[in-house]
Length: 142
Image 1 (cartoon, rainbow, N blue to C red):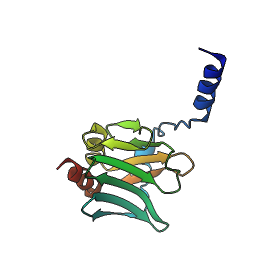
Image 2: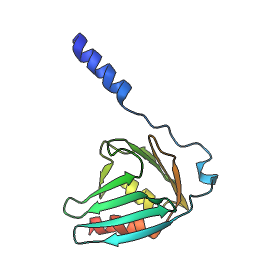
Image 3: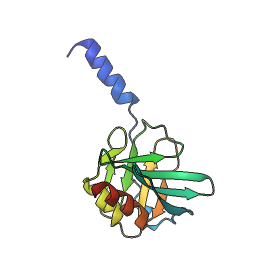
């Protein structure tokens, strides 16, 4: 590896934010106040979590591509998002987009009571499970 390639790799590693796993007690923390809603259009199906500050999380299925995108309010689109459910935990790939068949989406749909959503630069969310995310994902699979 050339010196330039090594320096570039070191810079990219240092610049790439890494999210920490959720704390062990996240399952016992109170859930964020707010509500899930579901929105439907010919192109997309969305599960939206909003609180008194506005929209905090959008889980959007784009039907044409059968991909599910996660957007967290206050986080830059290029910033990674980490999701934890009662059965699974993972940092989303660059772009925060998953194929509709990804098992993490099933874990979100069937999480027992809550899920953890974290993104660099914003406070983590502890959200109660709801049917709206499962509905948006199912729309992508149909």
